[in-house]
Amino acid sequence: MRDRETVAKVIREALEIVRDGDVTVDPSGGLGLDSTQSMELIMEIEERLDISIPVETLADARTFDQLCAGIMRLES
Image 1 (tube, rainbow, N blue to C red):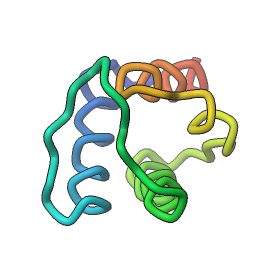
Image 2 (image 1 turned 90 degrees about the vertical axis):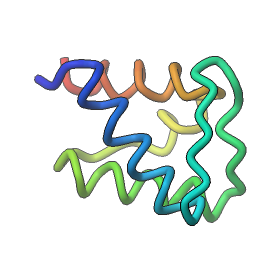
Image 3 (image 1 turned 120 degrees about the vertical axis):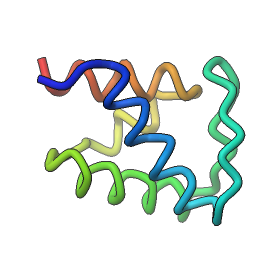
Image 4 (image 1 turned 135 degrees about the horizontal axis):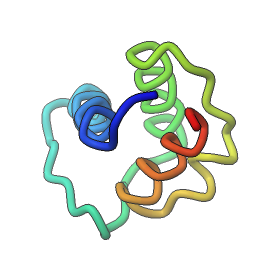
């Protein structure tokens, strides 16, 4: 199981790729992604963490912190 810092780092790195370098992250703010970017983000995270993320995990996550928590739940 990965710790929260590792998961958060992977999400930030994936966001950097999806947003073409714009990685301003507000942990309690929205992710600011369109549907295509959301799917790209999930694929990047899945590849980096070698896990499968249900679409519902992203749909339920309105913020960076919620996405991080959702991924952490998958690994527990």
